[in-house]
Image 1: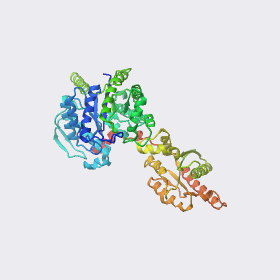
Image 2: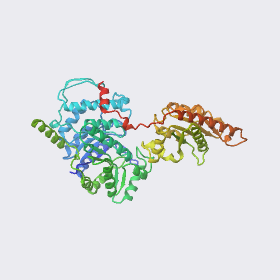
Image 3: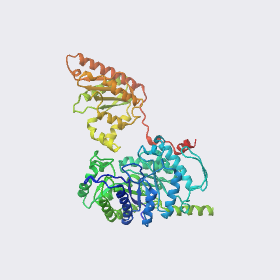
Image 4: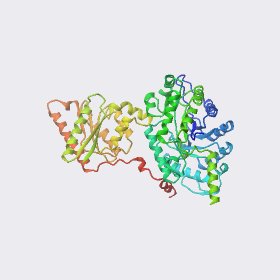
Length: 369
Length: 206
């Protein structure tokens, strides 16, 4: 264990393969996502995460169902969300569904929370997008309490009040799933993560590193400000996006047709400009390793590194080959290098085991004092 | 005393008339500021050089380092000279795309001089029908005189050219007057301005 979790995350988009024009059916894509999840464990990733969506062209909506499927078929893999909507979901249902998944998976679940990125999702679920930030704050605060207070009285702006409510099941071993707050550009969400001493996941894959540095350092300072420990003990996660071949020219040649028309950046900057300005790395294993490790210089020693591997219409076969190759040539080196000179006081990536240990330690201290 | 003047020149051809007009306005503004004891620090942004970057930023959501430098310059400007060619009765698409990237608060209360060029004087009201409403929406403090230059204003027997020089001087004087009378702009960093979480949470629990 090098203290950092390496994972795969997907938004579950259905995008035509630009080299053949063919789109997978929803069923094919859903099954493909599960194969990617299983492959993640097989080749040595620690985490697989899916993003919640309720609109075309994305398929993952019921995240705890997919999490349960993967938990039943894996031994080590942690299922996470990239991201789950804290704005439009009922926090009571979230508390119960993710606690249930936590039991079924023996603690192999955590959450990365976000506000969602498509405007109509809010009205579809009876909410107003202008309340996005307030919803994120109130809903998470309720979720946080539900997992920590056995019998809760609660009243807020956005949901019917609760009197004497106990969310069921209670978290496994009394330890709630770890929560990462995800935000690309809102300091308020980094502030929220810092306030609770939770993790901050900055999905930087579409952003230049100056911005990444700024957001993460803000979160770290605020984590310290709220008394959870020194800034370098805050929990930081980053995104990444790679396409790898033994020879970098092959990687560029194969990936370019997907890049050129991809959602998000297609028809915009060239592949070379985009690689220069964002974490996207299309090249040899050595290039992927060097560029990924360079983020340690930008944000300090961190706890979670996720990779986007399956978007822009890349066929499943290619994605699985990429994962095999990464597992063999990249992950072992990354683990070793990330562990080099990592200070002992920098926390490992939080898991159920580490959270349980720290809870027991706190209880022992309370008993002995 | 120093004030930052930023010139946005939306001309699309090299050695464009728009750039020529913008340069004259910048020079006249510097001069008018100098008579008020203010030194002008002028930055010129030629949108043509950023055409690809502007389109890319529209698609990707972030600016290239060069474009970010330009955007930051506008955000920190004490006064702006906004000049565009008139295409189909309005500012160019590129000019509008650049303005869109600046966000809604970029011109809040900032003195702005509006200028435009076109082949004939028939387009001159585009200044007041197209540019002025855009900058009113952005809550800019537009100076009363807009400067329009048609091709004929650059030559001829001196009548038209003389009139252009007069308009340049008057508009520059108006801009300089507003800029000199105001405190230098303070750029608020979004991280410093972020409310503390206890306030965010407290606001809800009200």
